[in-house]
Each structure stands twice: as C-alpha cells, then as structure tokens.
Picture 1 (cartoon, helix red, strand yellow):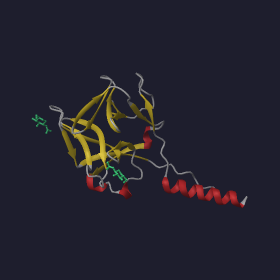
Picture 2 (tube, rainbow, N blue to C red; picture 1 turned 60 degrees about the vertical axis):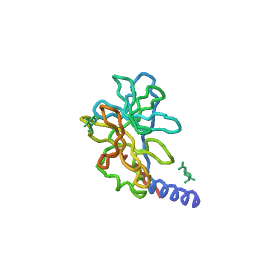
Picture 3 (tube, rainbow, N blue to C red; picture 1 turned 120 degrees about the vertical axis):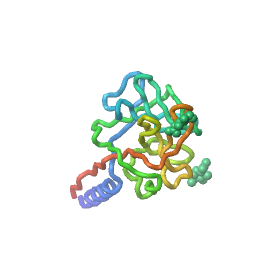
Picture 4 (cartoon, rainbow, N blue to C red; picture 1 turned 90 degrees about the horizontal axis):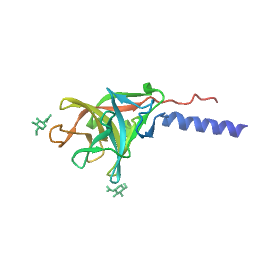
Length: 176
Ligand SMILES: *[C@@H]1O[C@H](CO)[C@@H](O)[C@H](O)[C@H]1NC(C)=O
Ligand SMILES: *[C@@H]1O[C@H](CO)[C@@H](O)[C@H](O)[C@H]1NC(C)=O
C-alpha cells in the first residue's frame, strides 16, 4: 500500500513537471478530419521531405501542402498528416521572436517535425500579403527563426517576429 502511494506520488510529480498534450497527427486520405486544427481554412500539416518531417500548411481546396525546404517553397501532395485535437482550445498561438525560443521556453510548444538534427516547431506570420504557416527552428539552431517564402518567386525568407503554436498543459490532479 505504502509502495503504491509512493509510486503514485512519483508518477504525479513526473506528469506535473512534464505536462501533457492531447494533440495527434492523422494521415490525410482525401477527407478532412473533423478534429483537424485550422486557421482561416488552412490546416496545420506535417509532410515527409527527404530525411525530414516538416510542418506545412494544407489547403483543402488545392489538396496540397506547402512549406519551405532547402531554401525555397515546396508543394507536396503525398504523405500529408493533419494536426488534430479533440478540443481545439487546447492549442493557441503566442507572439514570439527568434531569440525567445531558448531551451527553457520550449516545453509547451507543439512539436511539428525534425530537420537537420533540430526539433521543429510551428509558426504563423502574415507575410507577402497572406498568412503563412510553417516551420520554426529554436534559438539554439544555426537556422533559428520562422521559415517562409516569397509568393512571386518562391524564394526563402526567414522572419524574426512571428507566432508560435503552443498547447495548454493538462496535469493529472494529484491524489496522494
Ligand atoms: C546531430 O546531433 C548529434 C548529437 O548532438 C551530432 O553528433 C551530429 O553531428 C549532428 N549531426 C548533424 C548533421 O548536425
Ligand atoms: C517577392 O518577390 C517579388 C519579385 O522578386 C518582389 O517584387 C516582392 O517585393 C517580394 N515580396 C516581398 C514581401 O519581399
């Protein structure tokens, strides 16, 4: 009994300090998931790109995802996953800058992928006449910042002022 209590406390402490998220990714197979997370009709997506997994913006009308990779806009139609959460209010955008995403500030950012050895987060910014959603490298990466592109020629741009997607933590109430 005592041991169970101790275990319970240890588990609670672990959960309370790490927090929990409820989001998940669903494969896109031609039908938009009801629990998909979107912003102004654009869904937050994840796509495989060479050896990376990249956050992207999925346009349901065009049935394609767009993101920046290797210095240019990339349009992808296969292997798309959509970010989902049963309660969209679990997720929110927060204004930030490139230098604020230090290691100690990353705990409740939504993880959007992995590239060049760096965890990628999900950013949003109004650029070149439209809202862009895409990848964010944390401050300790040599590529730090929000990566987007020019609409006319697709060339790559790195922005320092943007919003980042975060989740509300759902700690389990301690019972011991
Ligand atoms: C990736 O990270 C590991 C461990 O930090 C390091 O040994 C390796 O050189 C890195 N690779 C690249 C391509 O940066
Ligand atoms: C995008 O590129 C076009 C053509 O190169 C240029 O005229 C335009 O100013 C660029 N837009 C931004 C926001 O830099």
